Length: 429
Image 1 (cartoon, rainbow, N blue to C red):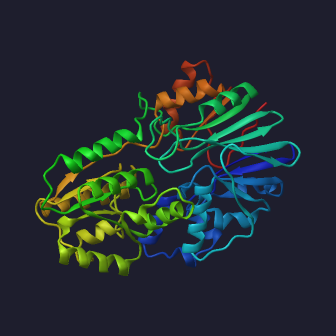
Image 2 (image 1 turned 30 degrees about the vertical axis):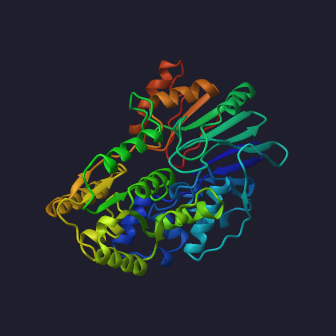
Image 3 (image 1 turned 180 degrees about the vertical axis):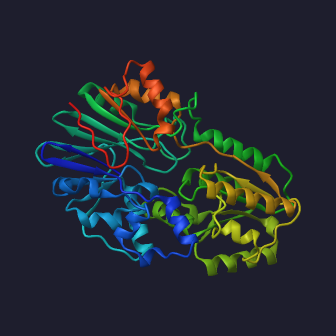
C-alpha cells in the first residue's frame, strides 16, 4: 500500500495482504473471520495505515493496480477508514468482488470498474488513469496519477512481455505520451532488479510446459501440475495442452476456482467449457475418488500447492487425506517458483521428499516470473524518464540492483532515487 498527497488531495494505491503472515496465522490454528482489522495490523497481515491518519479525509480514490491478493486483499478491512471510491480494471474489480462473496463481506465505499485508458477526474487538481501493463495476472496496470506537479506512475508489479498468452502487450504508446507530459515520480517493482537480464515472456514458460507434457512418456501415468492460482495464462496453457493430450482437465482448489470464476464472469476466459473446476474440500475429495476409480492416466490434474502449503490440494493428495495415491512413474510439474521465505522452502522440500519416496518424477521451475528484471526496469525508466525513482516491492536489500542501475543512468541515491521504509514519508519538489 502507498499513498500520495498533492496539496489538499490524496490517493491511496493498493491495500494488500501479507500472504505469508496470513498463512502462518491460519496454520497455527487462527481463523481470519474471528479477528478484526486492528488485530490483523498487529499480525502484520495487512498494512498499518495509521501512518496516514491525517490524510484519510483527503483521499479521493483507492486505486488498485492489479488483482493479486497481496495488492487488494486488505481492501475489505481498510476501506471503511476512507470515504472514497475503489477503482480498478474490470478483472481486478471482479477478483475483489469474488473475495467479498467468498468471505461473506461487504464494503462501505463504491466499487468502480474502469477500463484502461479512461481518465477519471478526482476533484479539481488530479486525474486518475489505468495504463495497460503485463504481469502474471490479467489486466494489470500502470496507475497514472495526473497532478499539477506532474504525473506520478505507480507500477508495483510488472514485466515487459511482448508475447503474452492472453491479452495484449504493454501500452508503450501511452507511456511515451506520459513521458512527454512530464513524469514527476515512478514507483516501480524492483524485486528482481539484481538479475542482469530481461525477464522472458510467458510464451517461454508455455513452451517449457509443452516440452514436459508432450516430450516425456506419461501415457500410463498420472500427471499433476501446480501453479499460482491467479496465473490464468499458465492455466490456459495447461488446459489447452491437456485437451490435446486427450486427457480430461481438472482444476482443483478454492483459490483457483475464485480467480477463474472472476475471469469467467467478465468474459475473459471460457475455462469451464474445456475443464472441470472444483473448489471446495468435499467436492475435491469426491472428484479425486472418481479419478482413482476411472484411472488417473485419463486426467490432467492442476491444483493448488506449489509452495508446499500444508492445507493445499497437492499436500493433501500426498498425505492421502484425499482419496488419491501417487504411483511410481507419475509426474508432478511445479510450474512456479518457491517464494523464498523459510516456511515455504521447508514445506516445498518436504513435499518433494515425500513424492520421491513414491517414485514420482518431479519437474521443477517450469516457470517464468511475472516480475521485471534489471533490463525491464531500465527500459521502463527510459520510456518514462521520471524526475524521481522509487524502487518498491521488497526490503532495501532486494532494491540494491535498482539503486545501482539508476546510478548508472545518472540518478543519485538520496537526491532523485529514494529507498523508503514502511510508514515513512517522502517530500518531492
